[in-house]
Length: 209
Image (tube, rainbow, N blue to C red):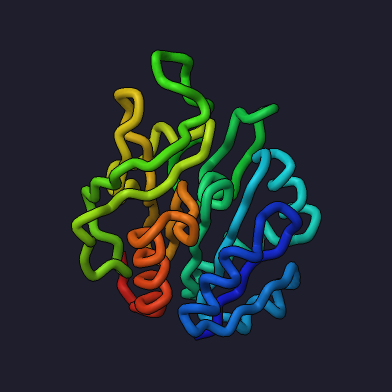
């Protein structure tokens, strides 16, 4: 399995690259769309601020490449900030247009009785099974660290949520061959590694949804 990691300058690529290699993947790390097209699946990582990430993606010509992946029938996985970039826009720092592959906006957690950022282990509750996930484990806890979340989403595009501060926080999202995870699966214990393994194993399922 060949997996391409989009290297646009905002992401700790080492941990996810090592996790993929442990799953016996051949990993391509590049910011060149022509090189990334050699992969069977594409991973969009991300750590940092939404507007900085979009500026880099736009400047490198990667935004259009990512938006073209569905029509090329190439599966895409966005992780953490990479998931948030899949949405229409964000209010982080300043209003910024996103990739628009999923319906909804990225907004900061509203102040309340809970701590911001949302940091810690939370259980995922699946309302829809992703095309790539055959089953769930008994323990579905994953580790979150984020101050912004997806809101005004489509119900069918939110596959799993975590309960935090009375909110149902989108944890696994997607439509068709587009998938996003708000947490880092490679840093989320047994279930996080299982999810990454399942996505890799079933990345080429040709499911028309």
